[in-house]
Image (cartoon, rainbow, N blue to C red; front, side, top):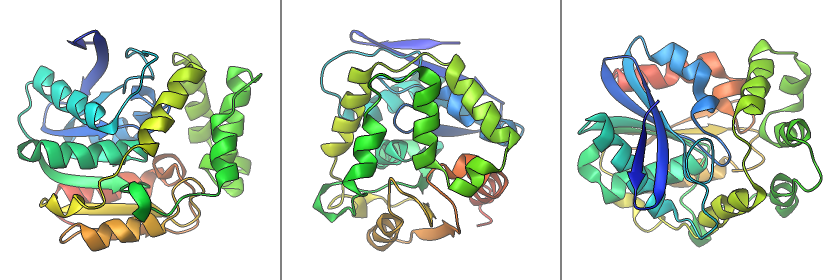
Length: 267
């Protein structure tokens, strides 16, 4: 699969399908591997483009500060490499922050936007319990499988964890196969979130926007989505009842259908 070079950085990206382009932007520690079920659902109907942010997957993992703004510029560079002028965008968690910046910094590149389980940063955001963030960030002494199991207790509901879902098993297997994220790169991504603040600029987003929240999200309290829907002109909000942060995993069918309908202008 292709890579692009931006200065000293290499950004890994992939493309599936041949129809109207759709760009997927991952959250912390995530990457191309995260979206398998969604790619399968959407690639017959869209050209699905997905990439690894700096600090994760098969992209460069430099040990210097990252910003959400530069990640948005990387997303625009991926579109250039893919030969795509304008695109629908789906961003989840940190990916939703990158998607906001992409739409603000490169408004001619985005025609429709989905922001899932995310916030606009700064003082307006509603933070999670500090213990949740500390637990997510602390991988000291844990094996790769232990890191995944620890994080899943924060990312999905206990009911879903106990369900024995095949999708959950596949998710864990894919993450174990993916390149492991160094602890310093995880910190750099989390620090980028800490430095992000678009709350006074999101009113510049003028494209149709769908805000997705999860009722039991421990990492991004759903009230953040309500703030986004208030400040982004014309935004529409949908909440996934009883779901945790990883709505594309825990509510895969509903999530995939909701996004597909939105981009087909039926939401």
